[in-house]
Amino acid sequence: MRLGVIGYGLRVSSIFPALQSEELGYSIAAIADPKRDELKTRLGEEARHTQFFDNADEMLDSCELDGIIIGTRCDLHTDMALKVLRRHLPLYLEKPVATTYEDLSRLKAGYEASRSEVVVSFPLRNTPLVRLAKEIIDSGKIGTVEHVQAVNNVPYGGVYYHSWYRDERITGGLFLQKATHDFDYINYLIGLKPIAVCAMKSKRVFTGTKPAGLKCSNCEENRTCEESALKPHNRHGDDYCSFAEDTGNEDSGGALLRYETGMHVNYSQNFFARRGAARRGARLLGYKGTLEFDWYTNELKVYMHHEARVETHAIDVNAMDGHGGGDGILVNNFLQTVRGKERSQTTLGDGLLSALLCLKANESAETNTFQNVEWP
Picture 1 (cartoon, rainbow, N blue to C red):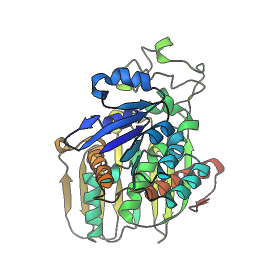
Picture 2: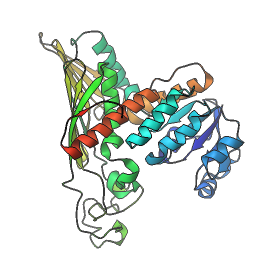
Picture 3: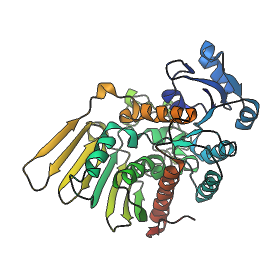
Picture 4: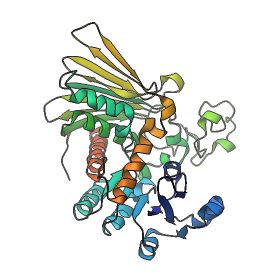
């Protein structure tokens, strides 16, 4: 399989670490990236069979490719995806699939007019924890899910203030960056249609009066500041100041999602929890029992409500790759769609709905209103 990449960034290079893989049966035959010369130098001999282009159109017009991977920065996802959808090629698309209502509408229309099979980068629903949770929920063991409490306490939150992620014009904010994953796996687990959202967000920690553009390397407090990028655990690829005037993004947020049955989900995320405070997972409550899981402990527990029994399931972390074991399954699903042997397990329809929920959450938080989940 000859694959093309539009935007060969950190995420793409981590989930497709080899440009040529005999085991998986693919080669990265072409890369379109404005940093192509830098990439050619860095990749060296490994890229001897790969063609490099400055832009996506040139690559798509010049090469016979079996599938396309898009890993650009977030604000370009829609434009690049539309180029591929018009060619009806299998597509792997990073999340969020769109960062504005206008892009969301354009992408929805392009998807409906295309024959492309699209795999959206939602590894969490592919993880062993979520697949086990889905199996237990669908068995009826805890009854129908009538309430969900989901949380994401991000211990590496500095990445959203040190690097290019700090620019909300690119990211669309942190609902679109993080909650997009969580909303997707929640929708998958409960199998219901969301109809309304109410949200709040705040910025209380990563604020300050340091000058715009300041970097940790040039700051006199870089040895004492807890967020200093000179400290090994804060190295996220860049070192812009987290307390400067131009630091974007909220640092906590929460949302209530109402579903078609009347049940609701309570979701919370924050970006200043550290070390042992890290948590990502959910509690799903039915009348018969409660199921909970956490990717940081790799455990799933079922608490039976009407008998003295708690079941604990532990996942073998040595058998997993990135994102709690979801990345490998995600990549394999994409490769199988390119071969025509599988359908996408995380479709663009899923990606569009998740992005819509995140945009509605942003609008709710900014306008202090409930928002109906309707297509603009």
